[in-house]
Each structure stands twice: as structure tokens, then as C-alpha cells.
Amino acid sequence: MKNKVQLITYVDRLSGGGFPDLKALIEGKFAGLFGGVHALPFFTPIDGADAGFDPTDHTTVDPRLGSWQDVQDLSLSVEIMADLIVNHVSAQSSLFQDFLAKGKGSEFADVVMTFEKVFPHGATEQDLLNIYRPRPGLPFSKVTLADGSQRMIWTTFTSQQIDIDVHSIHGAAYLETILDRFAEAKVTAIRLDAAGYAIKKAGSSCFMIDETYAFLSELAGKARQRGMEVLVEIHSYHRDQIEIAKKVDRVYDFALPPLVLHSLFTGKAAPLANWLQISPRNAITVLDTHDGIGVIDVGAHSDGRPGLLEPKAIDYLVEEIHRRSNGQSRLATGAAASNLDLYQVNCTYYDALGRNDNDYLIARAIQFFAPGIPQVYYVGLLGGINDMDLLATTGVGRDINRHFFDEQEIDFALETPLFERLAVLIRFRNTHPAFNGSFKVATDNSGSLVLTWSHDTDFAELRVSFTERRAHITASGIEELGVFE
Image (tube, rainbow, N blue to C red):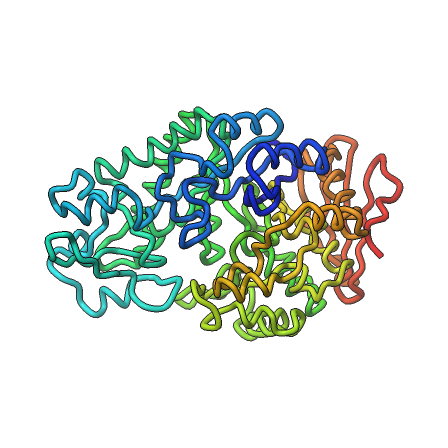
């Protein structure tokens, strides 16, 4: 994976079209900005119950976006990351529809994760309480088969997303078929979506248990055999992320976004500095994604181990996001919106910072100096604001940060001082040789955060005073970037 900034985007929501249009943007208006693109689910269909994360056919490109040849054509310009949706398939998939029609007679019967597979002798109340839940309620849905019989199946996320048995013969073959298709299209990295929920075991939390680690190692090995790196997407306790990082190529640094906000909101550098001392060096860093801003990643473990922030600090963080976004994030978060997430605040990162350009650029600079490969979400790239119209239309909280940009909006954004200064930061991160060296984090006598990269005779240093909300970059071979106020 190139040590350059990557773009995260839905193909159609940024380009207004398909892969050829996205390629034109990357090579034209965004030329020189990105070493790679994480193309969010582009499979058939892109407009299901979860914006592409519930494909009916994971092995085909939605024809509205193009073809696998178009994906391969884009790979000639940038490295491509694609999602492997590990945990579930769409309720509308031919696989599940065959199961509904034929029950145990279906050739895919072994793929569907039923209640009885995990609890053949029934489940106790404690068994059910042990199951880790990202959302309210139990992870089961009742379905009626064609013969009138009823079955209880696992649906971790929604009733339209049917959990699969990844260790079944057809389940394993299903995942390998997708890997083969990716490799043929020259995809160089895969993101394992919802991987932490893939293994279910009676009596356990059914989330990131020992067997899950073993499965992830096995699947990562299959991907590497096909020439692809593996990124695991898991929101969890920060120490768990450190352990996961030892077993895969890449993990997300999901603790970074809330910690940066905390520092900018409170003027305190210590929690962020402490995390950067121990954070995985093989991370993918983000401030914003297609999901919300996670808070579980900085919280305490369920067994009582302390988090990166105290509970009161997390409460303040969430309320401050709501305040700075003028209450918009509150309308998109928790019980206020469907498809709710218990541990995320839905809001653009720019709005979370009260649309303050300087604070936003400081946040991006910290991200670019943090250990790992930086990814910038398409809405954040253009300084996008909360899409209240889309939220009102769909009722899906995360849609507040999933705007459909048209060409006029993109052209307007490209002319803003915010984008121009962000582009300077991105190019600096992509080209300065110091970022190929070693990293140090410190706080000086004034309490400022100091992040330093050095490689041979080259160096780059970011100094941030959170109390004054000011930042400065010094680097070998560069006089002044002119990014901050």
C-alpha cells in the first residue's frame, strides 16, 4: 500500500455517475491528491437497505456504475480498496431466497446462520444477555419458509441483512469467490466489513472471540495469496484494536477522531498524546467515514478496564458535537433516526467542529501526522455540511453524512480556501520524505502537542496548541505551508 493519502467515496455520490466518471475526477480535478481509493460498496445493488452494504450479488458491479473492466481501468491510476462484507448477505439475495423456498433442501441451507446452529439445545437468558449488541434488541429475526414453517435466523444488523455461517462449505466458497473476483479486477486491498461479528459461539459475546481472531487470520491469508492487503473494520475497546493489529495487515485508528475533537473542545492534549504513544503503527487513519463518529473506541471495556476518555468526558464530547452542529447531529443519532447505532454520533466532521476552517485543518494535520495511512472521506474532502434533506427523506441517521454531490457543488468546493489549504496539506503528506521514517510524539512545557517524523536528514514537525487552537508545521526543504490561520 502506497504511503499516500487515500480517498473514501461512494462512486456515484461523488462522481455523479460511474467508475469512468470517478476516474476522470481522480485524474483531473483531484490530480496528485490520492494514492488510492476506497470505493464503498459498488455491488448489485448500490441502493439496498444499507447503501450497498447488503448486496444481492457481491460478485457483480451495479451496472449503473459500470463493469469490472471499469474497476480494473481505475486501478491503472490509483490503488483500489474494496469491501468484503463478511458477516451477512441481503435478504433479497438468490442465496437466501433459495433457502426460503426450499428450507433444508436448499443447497445453500448450510450458509444461513440459524438460531439452532449456535444454540442446538436452546439458549438461556444469560446466553442472550452475553451477546454483544451494536444496536438495541436481539440479533434474530423470524422468517417463514415456503412450506409455512418458521425459522429463527441471525440478523446482527437489520432484518434485511442475513448472517452467514462463514465456516460452512458454501459460506467459505462464497467468500473465496468474491476474493477471486477482486483479484481479477486488480483490487489491491480489501476491507473486511463487520468482521468482528462473523463467528458465533454459545455462551460467548459472539464478538471478537478467540475463534474470530483465528478466522480473520485465515481469511487474511487467503487474500494475501491473491496479492491483496487486508484492513479489518472493528469498533471496539482500544486495547482490542492493538491486539487485532498484530494479526492483520491494517486496522482503523477509530480512536483518533473523537480524541482530536476532545483536544480541540477542551484544550487538553494528554489523552490524544497518550494514545499516539501506543496506537497501532499499521493503522488506516480517518476522521470521517460513511458511518458516524465512534465513541466506543475511546470508552471503557465492559469488564471495567478504563478507556482513553472518562465517561464524563465522552458525555461532554457528544453534547459538544450536538451543540456545535446546532442540534443537527442529535436528529441523526440514537433513537432519533432509524438504522441507529448506539456508539456513534452521526454528523459531518466539519459540522462537529462548528464549521471552523482552522480547527478542521488542524484536525486534518494531526491525522496526516499520526502513524498510518490517512484516508479522507469524500464529504470531508469538500468541506461538506450535514445533509438534512437526505436525512429527512430516508430517516437513516448516517445519511446526514452521505451527500450526493453534483458537478456544480464540486466546482464550488474546489474554489474555497478550505479545500485549497487542505490540498496543500495532502500534497505535503504525500511527497515529504520524512513520512517514510520514524515517528515521535511529545508534549512541550506549554502543553502543546508535538508530532515529529524524521528520515535520514529530513524531518517534519507539527506543533499544536489546543488552548490557543493554533498549529504550525516546520519541515526540511519547506519554508511555510500557509495552511493555518
